Image: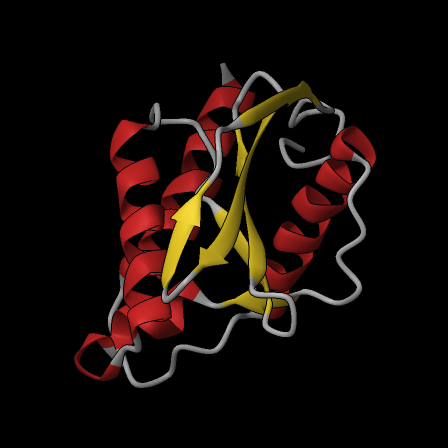
Length: 147
């Protein structure tokens, strides 16, 4: 029960920081470590190389929604649509974009360890999302995120 309470606190903290709109939208070191742990789990479960991909900071995009490009609007909508369907304890989606190849990934980590990968690509002038790919990853406790 104590671990569930701690997990709820982490998720609420992480989610609330993503939804907060403020001038200082830089990620904290704790958030960066959290994102890296989740990303590493996706590297293993989906055998993905993120070397040429850039992290898309949704927190920054949400704080400047007046000046978003069409790509940023698409990514923000994808993020919000996934979040709306998540369970309370699921991890907020993490987005990576390869600008050179017009491709990307949305990573959604579930409480039970399931890794949902949403491939993104640009077709003509529009960004699109491919069918979700599910693979079992490491559960949150084994990743050290419930300690």
